[in-house]
View 1 (cartoon, rainbow, N blue to C red):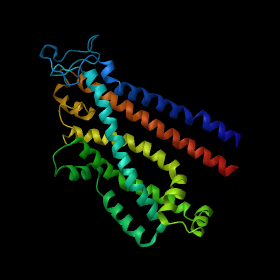
View 2: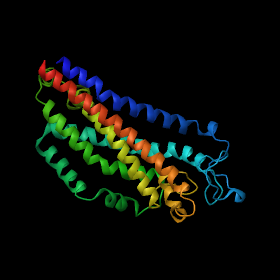
View 3: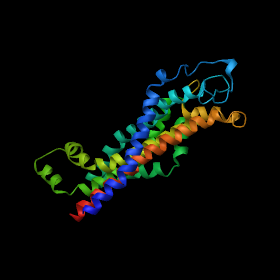
View 4: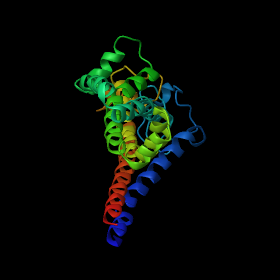
Length: 282
């Protein structure tokens, strides 16, 4: 048991702490963008078009003379916000439905899971395009589309956890006390299901950020003059040979953020697995 505990503090916390540090730095930079950069994110200057990185413009400038460093900083808040908002929406809708399906079973489980099967049979990007193509592009619509895509994943995970917890003694005791359905789901099952749900949510945030960037890249998410990272990469495509820094800066920022969030999720998952093994050994 002591060996397992040592492993939990020698491996998982490293990735978890590293991810938290990187994400904290990214958030700090994006939230203080107006204090760090002397330029507005949408300031156009024809005299500074396509300047390479320098002391005045750390990441260079784009085709409109806008400071790329400033735009990356301001775009981080929107890009991360879209991912977090989409994941929160999927969690709020998917987890209660999953808990209900796993706890009640029967007809409720059949109906919910058949709808889930239909949704997961459609490729995520295609499902998002079906949702977004019929309306005018907007950032909140992209977040909503990503959230809908991830609802089935949250339902399946919550259902699997609910199935394993539904026959535990504390659930049976709650039934004997006459507790209602939603009281049992929210106050009894959900707190015990939070560790795996929290890990999956952290991982989903990184995928949601990427998928939101994809929709912005395709022109179905945020619109100019926004500095969303996906939109910045899309707008920089014609400049890859002439000014590659315009696309590289938001691309690197996106990769660093996604990797850091994945480190948090994987570190938390490893810690959870080790603690489960320690509990079983004890």
